[in-house]
Image (cartoon, rainbow, N blue to C red):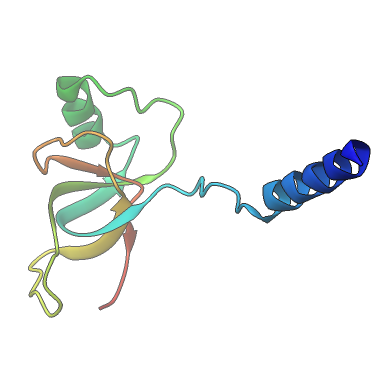
Amino acid sequence: MFSKLSVVVTTVLITLAAAVPAPNTTPPTSVQCCSSVQSSSSTAVSAIAALLGLDLSGLNVPIGLGCSPITVIGNNCGGTTVTCDAPQNSFGGLIAINCIPITL
């Protein structure tokens, strides 16, 4: 009797474990309005990254400079509207990483 119960419990636990979705490893993104978008190897980006203590060496991604989040649909962005990787730290709008231009 107990052996059948343990088989049923084990089967249920295995089924539940298989049904749990895998964690999302894609970094969140945010829509930003940036004054300019430059290569991560540009002089301006390197200077700002050095001031912030960021090591961008080895990266080949577009970097947004002078960015602010767009929170209202229809916001008139005077610069370049981009979607960027959401920062783990706030850099006061100075820099945003991996910014891809979009059309709203």
